[in-house]
Amino acid sequence: MADNSVEIFDTTLRDGGQSEAVSFSVEDKLHLAEALDHLGVDFIEGGWPGANPRDDAFFEARGRARLDHARVLAFGSTMRSGNRPEDDPVLTGLVGAGPDGAVVFGKAWDLHVEVSLGVTQEENLALVRDSVAFLKDQLGLVLFDAEHFFDGYRANPDYALAVLDAAAEAGADRLVLCDTNGGSLPTQVREGVAAARQRRPEAVIGIHCHNDGGLATANTIAAVEAGARHVQGTINGLGERCGNADLTAVLPNLILKLGFRGTRLGPEGLERLTATSRLVDELANRNPLNNQPFVGASAFAHKGGVHVSAVRKDARTYEHIHPEAVGNIRRILVSDQSGKSNIVHKLQELGLLEAIGSDEDAVGQVVERVKDLEHHGYQFEGADASFELVVRRVLGDLPEYFRLVGFRVLDAKRHAGEAPESEATVMVEVAGERAHTAGTGDGPVNALDNALRKALVGFYPELEGMDLLDFKVRVVSAGGGTDATVRVLIESGDGQGYWGTVGVSYNVIEASYQALVDAVVYKLVRDGRQGQGGGHTVALASPATAHLDKPW
Image 1 (tube, rainbow, N blue to C red):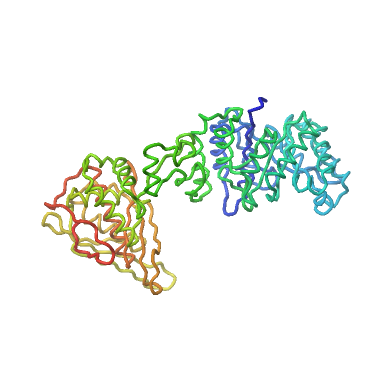
Image 2 (image 1 turned 90 degrees about the horizontal axis):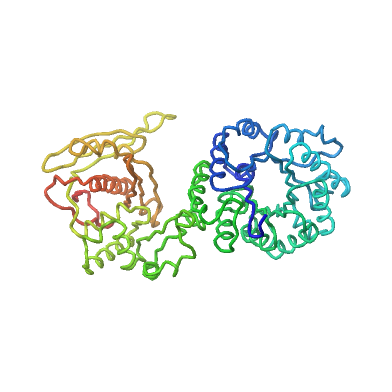
């Protein structure tokens, strides 16, 4: 192995699956295995055969995963005291699963040997030696995880190193030093790795860190700097308790900052990192962390006007790497902290800059309008469609598609134990013609959405293919209990794309209506539809002065 090369070992399917509220199905694990192989991972830890039916089923089905390079390993413990290797259910279970190799963990901390296992130190060394030798003979590839190595090294360095000796002499292909409790510091990790390398200079030393002290990534990098060449972690830092070292942070730092390469993964392969991160969150049924380094949606998002002005001149001023290097994108946010640079960039991004040209007054009006709306609770960071409509309203460049005459929403619960029923009626006017319709739905907003589009679809048939995809409500200013301003964010789509809109009011239904209307209007604008109202819309009123009879 070249000195600047590191092996990448992913345990998302095993250790990551131990995260609270995360449960991967067999199909999920097969899908993830393919994605990890495509990313360039060398080893995939698939699970512990015999520990649960799902891991057994995964190893039975793993042949369906189309892997080009990555080897799938089974995980288990050293044999139980008093057993022979060939009769030990854990070891025979590992062999019987038919993996490409095994990962076996053994105790490297004398406290665990004496308290958890209840055996002598010599007996533990024999368990390590016999287990590794048996698996080496049966499977050919064995990685030894020295559990609690760093705690053990601090407590009894001679014994922790003797455990490594036992595994190495029995034929272990990798000696992996584990910070199992996740509480070590980088200096302690460096010291432990250096001692292991000095003791076993011929061995490939690995590192496996947990994040209980918030230092799993730093500790992993420290270990590599000290000579470890086998790196273990999970995508998005999944794992028991506070998680494992996050490979989405470890790999870019090693490859882009320190000049290391995976055996198959170099700088060019990192372009798949963000997509892999999003896939893991999707299958784990988790919302991605926006502020996650490198791959988060906010990792390269700029909000302050000074920052945006500098980034537009040279991105290096406020970005430590190019976002494209890890498959991410730069985002310029608009808010009450926006300056003209934010707005100009956003206008350029939306293709509206040409309409304004060099009109500084128009840009200034947009800036002031955005700041005023955000002062009243609006937020456009997740509502680009509403932002574009604000700009068009300021410019007087938005057709009048319809005018609301009025709406009514009713919720009724007729019997205990039955779900409430929601019904909405809407009356709109299009080019002097009125449409009055009713709609039902799973909740008042869904009913209002159905009634509104039902009223408009006769005039604008393309709205038939539009759907409400997501709906979020947040209290943005506390009033007297329920008397508070709420912000509604809606995501809509039509099969060709999706867009976000926002509404704010003291009334959640009115806020929802604003966001729904923006969603409909944006769809018509995007489709190039001409208005039928014979005029243009006015600027969106702030919540304190909003009226339901404004034209849309």
